[in-house]
Length: 291
Image (tube, rainbow, N blue to C red; front, side):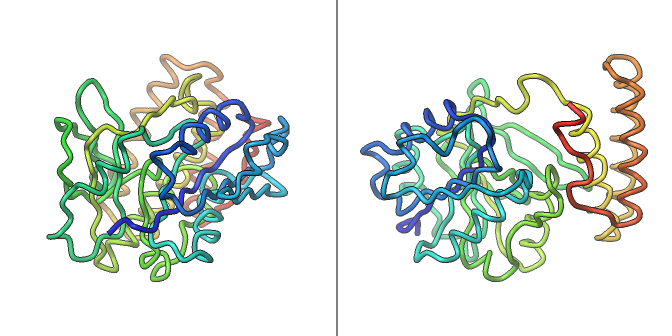
C-alpha cells in the first residue's frame, strides 16, 4: 500500500532544526522515499542557503510571505499532486520519522481498510499513543503502543500520511484557516466522502514540540478561537457551538486567573468571535505583531 511515498515539511525560521530533521530523513532507511517537498514560509534566517537543500530528492519552495501552517501544508499537497507518488507524509520542521518507522508502517495490517484517506503515525507519550476523536471539539485518549491500526476520525497533520486519491477528491486543506483547526476541517471533509481515518500507535515519530515550548502567544489564541467557531458554524453543528462555548469559557477563566497580557488576549478573543460569525478567515492577525 505504501510503496510510493513523498514527504512534505513546512518550515519557518528554524534553519538548524530543519537541517537536523533532514539529516535524519536522508539516511539509508529512507532511500525509498521518492521526494521531499519543503515549504518555507518566507524564513529570514538563511534557510535557503543550507547545502542539504541541493539534494536531488528535495523540492525546496520558498514562499513570498508567511501563509501559516495551513497554507504551507496546502502548498505541500499541491506539490505532491504533481508527482507520481501515492502518499504524502506530513511533518513540521521539528519532527521526523525514526529509523524503524517505514519498516513498521509497511508491516502493519491494513487489509480490512477499504478506503484509507489519512493515517497518523504517532509519537510516544510515556509508553502510550494519543488517539483523537471529534465530538464537536477535539477529544483525546491514550492507548498502549502497538503496530495495530486504530480507527479514529481525527488526526493532526504532523506524522500523518494523506492519500493522493483523497486530495484529488476533496482538494487540499483550506489555507484560509492560516493556523489551527484546518486539520479538523480536512478530516471532516474526508469523512463526508466516506474516507477512513486511522492512527498507527507505534510511537515511531520523534517530535521536539518546539511550537509549544514557550506557551501560547496571543495571536494563537485568536486563530484557535476564530477557526473553531467558524468550523462548527459552517457545519451547522449545535453540539459544536456548545463545545466551543464551554472551551472558550474555560480558557477565558484561565486567561483572567493565570495568563499574562490579559486584556490583549481577551480583546483578540472578542475579535475572533466577531470574525468567525461574519465568516472572515485569512491572515487577519500578524503573529509577528502579537507575540
